[in-house]
Length: 132
Image 1 (cartoon, rainbow, N blue to C red):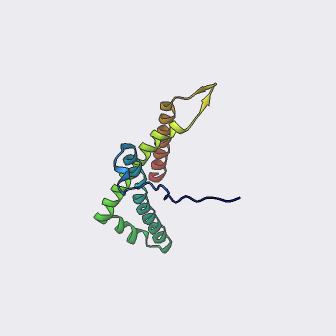
Image 2 (cartoon, rainbow, N blue to C red):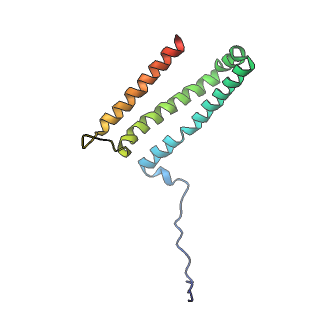
Image 3 (cartoon, helix red, strand yellow):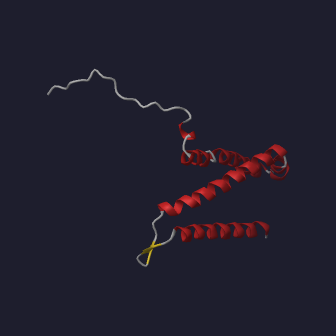
């Protein structure tokens, strides 16, 4: 068997750095995925808190660290990123989740509302456990 090679160059589609800025779906996707950056900040803060707890300097080092205005601003940005990610994720999940109940597909609003109820219940339970 012989194979023939073409003298023509392969077609390579050009991908520009701003490819995602043309369609709103991609803009939202990039924005949602960029919420991973504030989450990294939160993980670093949490790790520092665990280290201070292990060293016995939690109340002195970690609490004073959390009172720093820059840390407060970064934590507010992180919280906004987490809330944005949650809102968009809860909007997407019912579209991919196919729950059947009594041979009927559950409506997307039921799934989304159920996810919010569970989130709020777990958050309230956590707050109660922390402040008791």
